[in-house]
Length: 75
Length: 361
Image (tube, rainbow over all chains, first blue to last red):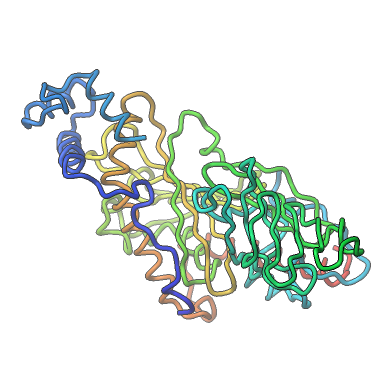
């Protein structure tokens, strides 16, 4: 194959910085709750709290702090 | 726009012409191998040409240099000084112009020679002597109109529907593959490979491994779709030829990707040369509010890596195919889309070769 080594192949184009353990745990938990078929916001937040995962301020998740955190980490 | 009118209105008949950036005659086979002209193509992600930066790229077997001026505008010139043909990309970025390293000749974003320091006032000064392409930046990507001849008029720049729809959220993805661009088109016009090649992926594990397909004509290309299954796997693809050639398709997400329905993909392949391709995808989802925020978070942390694995499965097959893999095949009913796209491109290449040959078309 010609010049294959020089080719641009980057799996992580949306996050040049490595994903933090916190982000890994949070995203894994969200997918776990979604995977059970819970697809509404109150159900997702209740699911995260049931998994014992806390918001960054140590409090339980609520719609306000959850959406703020998604905006911070997602864009 | 109909399938018959994608080419820019290039004058036909008359003297023999050369393709822009090419200094030899090209046959229809040469054009098919290195890419059809008179189209908009994605060239490079915007993030790869930062302010004050220049970048050499090969596209359609021609060397180009991209540079971003102080106002943020990207220019795309043939990478060739009009004086003695040294590559401008190894020269100096002077803000609104490039200076050739060999003799200091300065060329601006329009391809005009603005200074010949070795011989001030010489006839080359003020001459538009380097090929400069029309460039548009959109969807986080640098696009350019690659003309067939110097007479070609750029067609209006129009993004694919999904990327102009405010209700659709998207992320771009770029990769370079060591395979001919036509193999990319064959691959995406063949949805059935999803149920086999991608069966162990996060999104294409479901559905039948046998199907019947049909072609459904549209006023801008065609759909190639399964007649007996939709919304389960990679079940349909639309080929669109308008301002640029692209494919549009949808694949279901598993429940753990959350609400928002299927993910949509817009795909384009720009030939680097006859053996290598620049592959552009936009992964999209029609989501709003909290669903959009969560999808974007999950895309960055989880889904991007999974989509990448699927794309790598495609790349590995395409790079393993022999250069003449599309000769002496045994096609069956699922390959109607492949046959159709090849026929379209063969006809386009023939037409463009005729224009270059000076034949009336």
